[in-house]
Length: 224
Length: 277
Image (cartoon, rainbow over all chains, first blue to last red):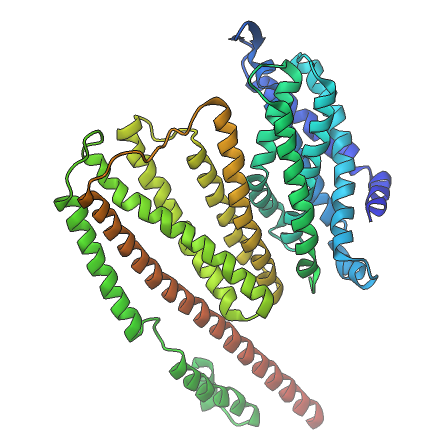
């Protein structure tokens, strides 16, 4: 399932040609919108942009994720593909996990490129690369697992484009929180921000949605 | 009905009997499902809700004393907290009804879930408005990034999304099943969001909204009156909302049956024409 979606992506290049530039564009727009003044944070002096860089990065990722999720179900929207998958005897849980895995792979790739871009344009330090890597993987898993479930809820009708963000974004509030704070800790290594405990929250969220998604996908795929 | 009336004048063909047969059927279902959503029970409930509201006004505005630190602003509390309780009750009912719907697949529980969520959103909107009006005199601002406020607002947006899913143009069973899944998962999300946001603010500061204010007996009783009044209003609204959804469902069914009958009549007519030619 994941392999199929990744092969579709490999041939169509929607993620590399559209979603990735879109995410980078958002980073640039943030850079334009936010004043370049310096802030005094504790002992350190940072630009406003550097200070809010983790938040901007994750917001850009969330917006890119919405596009990638829409894409994941758009490729199945035609000719009753979801029915065909069901008739092919693929377990609904397999469809769910496969979709989520494919979007995760696409999104991690987007994040690596966006992250490099953010380091360049926002001039951010990196105190703890391991924590950042763990955060990226866990947060992305959470985003795609919950996102896949909600994209499936909105799949297959006209309102999909507007409905997916409305459904997904509030649900992803904990991921945005956890990822932003863990990334802050990974970049600035500030005392008082427990980065690893936020990665724990991200892991719990992702695991929760593995469970919820595999349970819920059966009734969702039925007769859709 | 009007279609069958107008066509009966010109009705010479046998197919006209189909809509006319449908009309008495419609009338007989009209007896079992009333033309308005009131009944003796809901009228009594409505009167009880009105009386309780009057009692709330009396206790909340006249009899209960102003509070020491908040002065008159404390009176908003008698509206705010009951609306919180009722909003959560509505979302809880939605979850329970969604679980039962997924097990039984009955339209009844689907409509209950939708009705309860709708009323829950109304009351949570009221909760946010009354809360911010209360916050202005007590904290000096309409809004603080407090865990309770933040997570509640996220919750309201989630249930607005739930209502949006209920309005999707899908086959009814598919839509109901999706709504039921969402109704269950949303309640789970309320808990997750609540704790993560609490933890987030817990890192920086304690909860700003504390209900540590000491209330005397009469204030507590006024709040209790408010709770009873809001519960009655909620029950009254839920029953009516459910009946409206039910009637709408019936209308859709009848419209479908009528459209089917008309198509059938059409094909009969063209069939007859074809035979004549």
